[in-house]
Length: 246
Image (cartoon, rainbow, N blue to C red):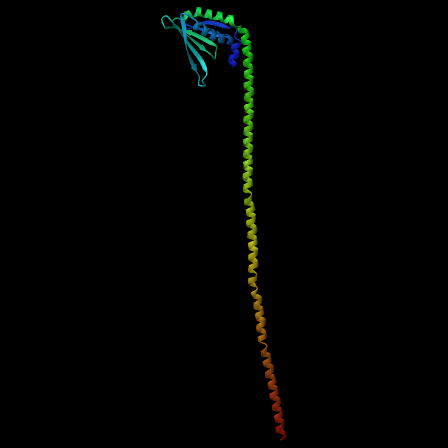
């Protein structure tokens, strides 16, 4: 687009040069567009010459160059070639019959002057190009903002995903607490269970107490023996006394 702006402000609408045995035309943007149209009409209505066009496109499919083969209808041979470079608004004419291009150019330029005013058209084209550039810049900034927002949304989504993953991982800590609680409860139950198993010790003490009363008859036996002995001694005393009396 910058090149097109420069072409709108060229000093001459048509500048003719002769370089390396070729005619070179440098035109303003308006003059170039008008010349293309006028050239097509001129050769379409010519009685001796006609043109065959061949386009050359870039990798994006845009036509960047058009070559016109100017053919003599009588001999059906090419007289010269006109190469139009659309990106630079330049025209190159070469071939053996290139001198014949000069009178053709005069007729074509005359038809151009009758149709449009090139300076006014250049001003109009300049305004349209500037508006197009501003629109492209605005569109580019909007696309950048949209791209940034998409990135922000993606980052937010990733953060939400991380939070969701963390929330899903939290029950693990609850399970750990539950496991700890169950283990503590199990240990306490195990202690309670082990304590009753020690109670038979009191039973043994009772057994000792029970066994002790069983030994008490020994004192009874001793009393009985003493009683019997005393009774025997008393009887013996009585017997002795009776014997002494006799």
